[in-house]
Image 1 (cartoon, helix red, strand yellow):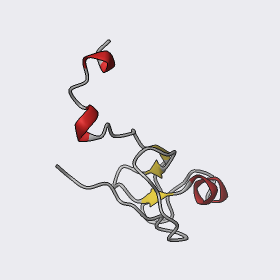
Image 2 (image 1 turned 180 degrees about the vertical axis):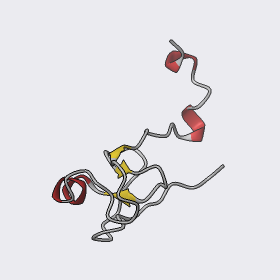
Image 3 (image 1 turned 135 degrees about the vertical axis):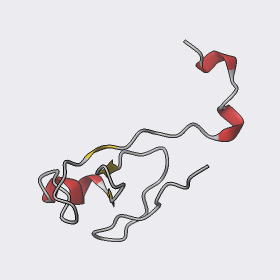
Image 4 (image 1 turned 120 degrees about the vertical axis):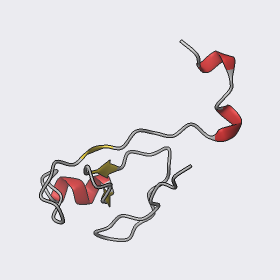
Length: 68
């Protein structure tokens, strides 16, 4: 399993797996404040910044209540 980045590439604030975080297609990672300041454009690749999907913690991955 790949690890999600836990720090904003701009300000180095911690970004947790369950909070809003923005990424580009190369997975450069930004907190909401930095993403907004960057007008949702990655300064590294010049691509669009979008909300990163939230990861389900392993202990919750097989919870039948999470299945639609």
